[in-house]
Length: 287
Image (cartoon, rainbow, N blue to C red; front, side, top):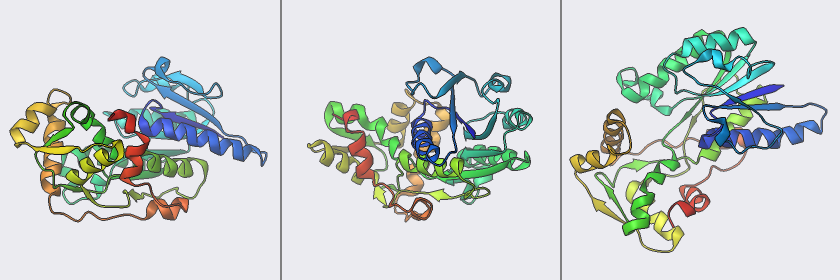
């Protein structure tokens, strides 16, 4: 079975490649083989084992996937697609049977169709569902890796500026998402499923900042910001539409009790990773 991982340079995609290779070694012991392929807009930046076939491909140019798709039955795909229908048509024509789509739990929220974040993921999910291909939709909540944007403040002043430090999240480790993706790609168990994935605990942004300090061995505090100050700071790094979405999400998460999903444990049989585990795994970002 050949599996194509699109966006293998991403945090989740690279972990999916590693997980498939691990699974392939086990599968080979039972006389079956899995070939893993990877694509990236910048394949020269990938550092993957030689047994992974690497192709240059661009989501905005569906025809660029032609060579990578030869003999591929299953594809891992990010939902970062302006025109999903064109790419899915290329997949179907090449003989792909199953797409595992990294979507978002935002599609499950009230008003998702009118929300900037929810609507863009919904559009891709709907296109996949209409394509005739078998699918699995992975719907994670907020990534623990969003905390990586605080590294400059932690390194510089041991402080993180935030407008809503009491916003509540259930941040998920990217490895948990990858583990579920691997299960979906390597078995039939999740065909047609759309698991919502979260971390195992609710934490405010303030508590996440404090946990980073605890792991790296020095106190890290929060500097209160206004929305305007936060917007000006974030605008230096991300597009304005994302600045508005980030601040909106924080504002609306203050005082909430986000649901916790047990789907990771149900699918893998293991407890999901904590935010502390993510910080330990990425501590060098903050030191």
